[in-house]
Length: 477
Image (cartoon, rainbow, N blue to C red; front, side):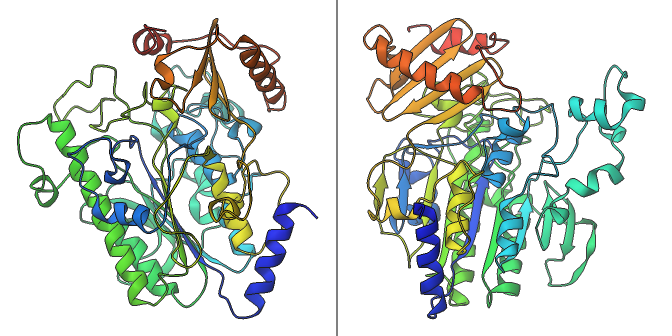
């Protein structure tokens, strides 16, 4: 019997004798760098006491990765548990999350869980989905520039969270929400509603309301905080916690992270009040690294374009959009009082794909060969030896990478790098001339993986505009 099937069988056996299956909350922040949780010990201006407690009373994973350094593909990988390149969603500006892909929410619902979500979705068709527009809206495919109103809402509805396995949704960014319930407990058919208030407090309240409504049954909830992604927005309550001389963008990021942290505290209090804290597992992960825009320019908060969001990737090299550690190595915390050790630091590489595999095992479902992740629980509890992954892979624009053990092979256009990312030098020291055979072995393994994808590659693609990042960050390599 396969290991995951054994785990699932054991879980089913224990659940049948009265142990309730755990509730699951996945918190996914937006453009938050590795440094901006106090428990990671990289900066001294961040204040996240409640998130720090998740780590202190749970597991802090120091080599946690996402599948892409960008919002849409990263979320697609998380929610499907599959490398998103397997279904052609390599990066923003291509397609929405295909309807034939099965999400964690759908799998958990089939296991008897009630499912819900709030916050950023970003997986439905939008005006940047150029490939999808060409195939589904041929009448406008030759239009020079697309705008949001070019996508009829009727075409979006099948892709919305309410049709992707979520029983209850409060999907939205700031004050407009596609919802099936209100914050005062009313249920209704999916519709757009206006919700006054501060976006992060709204998303916390939607989570709390869901927990209150469903505390007596096993639940899966996806909390997708829209922060600290631009537009930067914080109320006086949070800004006042960070006085002193600093870039205003940094102050706003710190304030937004403080609002998220308050939300985590409120969620924990709600779990405690309902007597379900011990048997609720919480994942806390960022969707990619912070966009530094190289210079971290402190543009006015009112600036509407893409800009530094005030977050930091310290100590890693690079930023959002890159397959360097700064783009894909993120905060990754797991907290489950009844099922995981307290205060453990886990250094082996893991990836957001593991969330789906772990959830499925905890729900008592059999393993699913199509998934690319691993159930992390036996590894974190020292019940299973070795590393969860022999190799982890990436392809993004003209960048390709693989991590095996402590080593990472990275290829950007014609330039190749080999790093030991477990050392203090990490991506500041190219070791490819020191370990040429290791680099060649990893390169071949990466090419094999590339051949498995929807748009297979038998060779590496050319580097594009991301060259400017590598010219800057890797100039000493």
